[in-house]
Length: 262
Image (tube, rainbow, N blue to C red; front, side, top):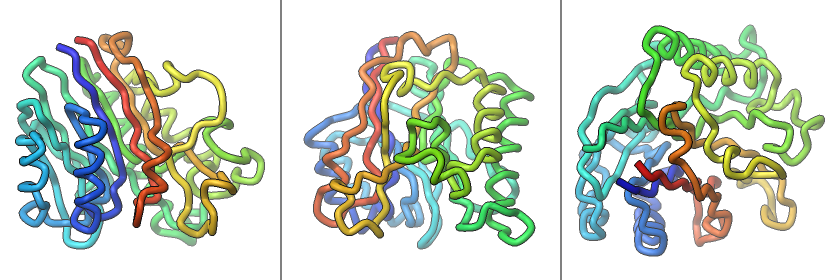
């Protein structure tokens, strides 16, 4: 079974339901994973998405914060939602397709502005969250799985606009990159985006603070698509839909796509 998949931090699914619908109409991914939905599950405007063929959803929600959802044209059943670091946040949902592939949708904590857990509780929460992800993958090796989401870390030097300038900026500090790498290694996850696009600058997020984000192009690749080794070779056609960042009243993230032939 071949299917296409996209992951997108939407920064409020209710505020930007029309953008979600536009992406569905124009790109038609079979599975769309959203983060930062900022909505209780029962307030997600599912009728808009169902009318476009996305008749299946698994989700975890919160009022005004966090929230993850998997919208699918394909039947999908919920198979878990982890609360790593015991934050009580809606940051993970897992669903299984009929072909047996499990999709994990993550929204890793951003970590605040100061990369020091002694003075910034949020940074400590981020590191704890990543450590528990690592431990979970060590405890039970994932198989036939895809992991997507806003992982809030740009791990490679060419995942940011200026490696040296961002070394002390949350999302690209060595301690975060190491923590994400440990979680990735624990599950033997393959970075599908970089498997397909191994070289060159690649971004999925541009700050709202930039007056002209496109011209300044001070981006970071915070959004990821990973797969377990047993299905990684089936992943292909990765792309980041940069123009979406320029839509009216956009999210500060662009959607990341991949296709799988399974």
